[in-house]
Image 1 (tube, rainbow, N blue to C red):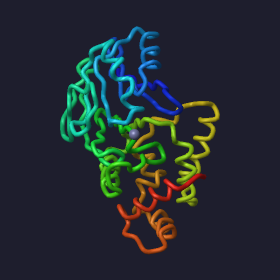
Image 2: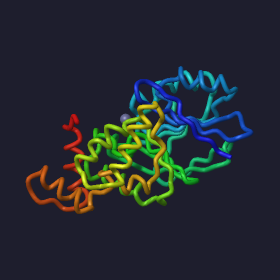
Image 3: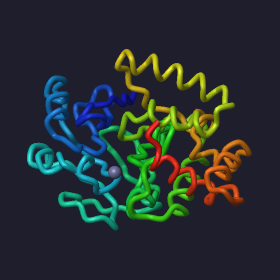
Image 4: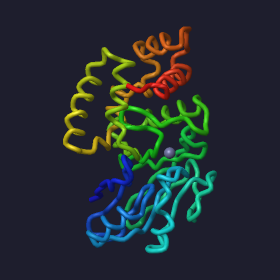
Length: 258
Ligand SMILES: [Zn+2]
């Protein structure tokens, strides 16, 4: 029985812990800060057998050295990004076998937020870093809008019941923006209301599922007529559904302050 639970770090980061009942060796995704992870593991008598890195940003790798010194885990990360401490460089199509957990995860290239960003997918789970957020998506810093759209489309094609674990609690702000894009989406309105309640109680709103994101996340809905027409109104000219619409909606969100 696999359990996945978050450690909160900084203002709004989630560091995901993969734990198998009966094993004391866990895997950790994107330890941006070692302190809260070590505190949570020590409290439970757990140690780290593997670390999975999605991309090179400091809030995802900042705790790596301290965790390596303490546990000497296998550290998986993108072969095209330079992260000190990664000793298992991997790329799209590779398989990461996590023997302590009894599972394997497939590596997916997800360029866009960073050019070498990767995700880890399998067993009904997807660790997506800063690519697909609950109700939104990451900013496009290093790749192109077309690359980010293609990366999100890869995730969108996973089975709808796949649970998606992103690295930030951005859901409420994302859904408020989503409502500006698609005010007529009733499932989205319901999701926003439920998220407002959850956040008022300080409950995490992650993980989500691919199916829920397909129904409510505008960045996965760039061929839906309502999203297309909202993007066309923003752009002031006609747009091809898909990547072109995505680029406009992403820039709209970049400049959006609620
Ligand atoms: Zn990032």
